[in-house]
Image (tube, rainbow, N blue to C red; front, side, top):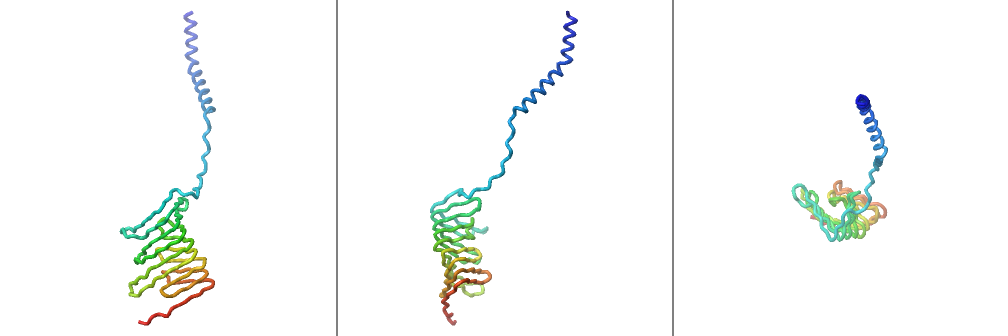
Length: 205
């Protein structure tokens, strides 16, 4: 009897590792079959054109690296859209100083501006005014005013353009046109469509 038990024990000790390996393999197989599959990665969604913050009766100022005021943006209400990094502003008013320290102001019923108000599209009773300035050569630049239902203004470079009828008042001169593109840096004024103007004679020194 003792010999039989020893023989059985020897057989069990011989096959026990094989049996355990088989059970482990079955358990691993069951675990793999029972584990839920990972969901496929979803494509990144394009940002939606929705405001991420609002402002009411606000004023935003920007400064250059030396701490000099570059622009001030004011309005009754504004909505910022992160997908285009633009501000949509109601009853907008803008003050901007360029590198030559010339003041330009703008106003309209509504506007679409980039973050630092250096480029702004003005809608409804749009108005851009460039105050008079004395240039380095000693010559003076008169006050200029642009009016229209739409104006696209680049506040730092002095460019103003529109595909809609506009009125330009420069000093005592007054010009109207169906479309306009004015570039201060190149000193070029392009007028399109029906152009009418009243030019006052210069005053002799």
